[in-house]
Length: 222
Ligand SMILES: [Zn+2]
Image (cartoon, rainbow, N blue to C red; front, side, top):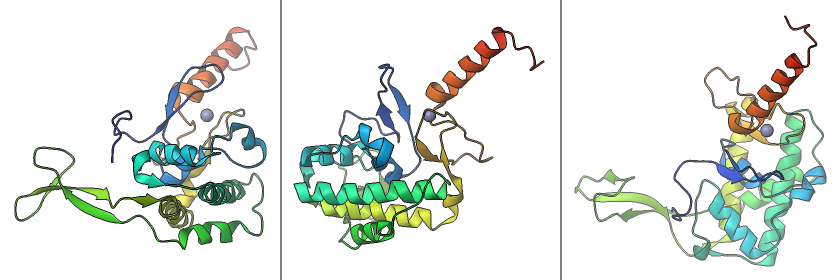
């Protein structure tokens, strides 16, 4: 399930306009996939146009699927985008930043109605992590049955979103604290005080801005 080019940690490497790449972990699979683009003002970041793009995005999410294992058509791209755009509106509605459209719940439900990914156990040949050991002493790891239809992945992602948006973690969905950053994540921190998409990116930019403001002398902060 790993593709060798990406490490095992969750998160996606983003490259903003200034070219300074950073790692962003939104905390959930469906939020990973939402980074592929979106509706309205997010549309200028659209990067999901072809079946190859879809395969590539499925491999960039925490599922880390092998693009070559996935069969995708232009219709799959359309369906995945409809679900993704609906998710953006539903999440924004939750955050008080807009309202969902009438068909949005149905778009997600429809995606989830397709058969999902099929998990299977695979012998690792021993010594390879991550592995569990069966009673017979054979080392096994989880993988997905292949070939994989794109609709199965879209379904799996839709189910992840339904699970999360209707459960206790929905309270922890946040937008990055930077005004000019649209990234959305689930705050998994114990105290629930995560403010930034990434400390390395927006957290740091905010610190620099605060420092500059102090230096330029307002002096009112004491
Ligand atoms: Zn941010």
